[in-house]
Amino acid sequence: MIPSVFNWSGGKDSALCLYQVLQEGRYSVEALLTTLSSNTRRVTMHGVRQELLERQALSLGLPLQQVLLPEETGMEAYNERMQETLLGLKAQGITHAIYGDINLEDLRQYREQQLAQADIAAVFPLWGQPTTELVREFLSLGFKAVVVCVNARLLDSSFAGRLLDESFLKELPAGVDPAGENGEFHTFAFDGPIFREPVRYSLVGKVLRTYGTTTEPDSNGLTQYDKPAYDTGFWFCDLLPT
Image 1 (cartoon, rainbow, N blue to C red):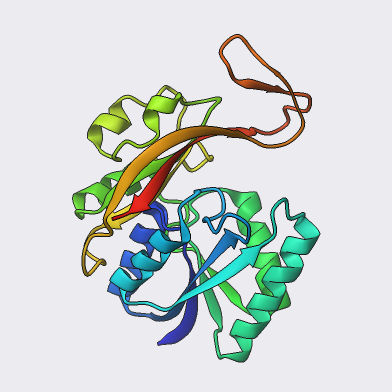
Image 2 (cartoon, rainbow, N blue to C red):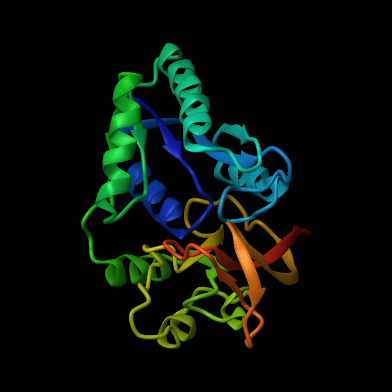
């Protein structure tokens, strides 16, 4: 089998992609690779605690390689840190890196360019598949996930902390991708056919975090941004391992 590293976010797309890869049996997944904040020890963008990430890997029975990034890391520093990691993996015999991305072409091109510098090939098993079909496959296989982060511009705080299920999908506003492929929401997968046992957690609370240059909150309590070229407000639901 082909020695590979699996880029693991801890969410539903990663879980479904890993399931398909393991079923196919073409790639040998030598490790899960995840980026975390060195300050908060939480998964980048998902906000999931390091301990829950480690319990996921333990339940999956796979080694976990964590890349700790300083807070407010710029792209240049991020690229340098990732290149260092990729070159280390290449030296260990890794030839391929697997991603659960579905249809963001610019992100795919970026990943391929970065990997090429380390002479590692990119693999996208879910690429181009309809997101509605993928999320329903995820549920039909018996996977379970909780929504840990939502884009505050597109979804209100009530969506954070909910299970990803048919009820959640039915209540999504028009224009929101059912798999959250455009960054509308992120999840934490805690049970399913690839887990030896469920990763148990409890909901702690929700917090609105904003990033970038801000002005005063508007009448709805959400922060307005001087440069709204990208979404910078997100509701996070904190999970504690139990």
